[in-house]
Image (cartoon, rainbow over all chains, first blue to last red; front, side, top):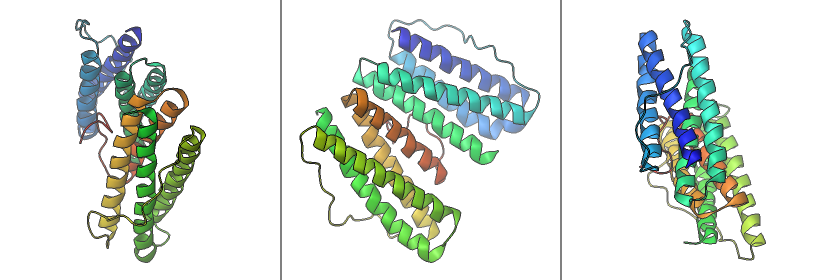
Length: 120
Length: 141
């Protein structure tokens, strides 16, 4: 359970960062709106893996840089971090179903990184 | 389904992927030699062959005869244009990702590492071929 709770916290942090970046840099809306949608799904499915976890507000506190390039770089780094962490959690998961979910979330972050890299 | 059966499905998917990239690689050689698409297709072909060989070794090591490739595979549509090549590549990666995602749930340790990494590789290549990132690659669609 601790593994999933930590995963949810990471995903909520990235979601909160995306939402703040969307507010600060309206020019990134086209890129960030789908990313916010994916992040909401990640949080939702991971919360679904824990039926007894009560919702709580996102705790992410990373500031959004003033420059768009720096914001995209931060997004890429957070996505890389989450991809790596979900992969490691997948390998440690005792349930095959949870392992598959974590592997898929990790792959989704890798897709985001690839997409961001191709646009920068 | 057992872990071994899931790995055999992965190997079968890799045989089909190698064939698919052989088809679209041939078309690209005629239409866009030296292009970014051809470079990407060549790299993907090599990657799928390497994963096929790793799976073959792993399955044989587990004491089972690895599933063989079919003599030929039917492509779901005619592949004659650059757009067809990209579409086929996205389809190949999408299908492969789903098989490896399932294998993650059936395996542990080394085989799970292989499956999870293959899922990510397929998903990333799908983006390279023009697909939008998905929330849950290998699980949906």
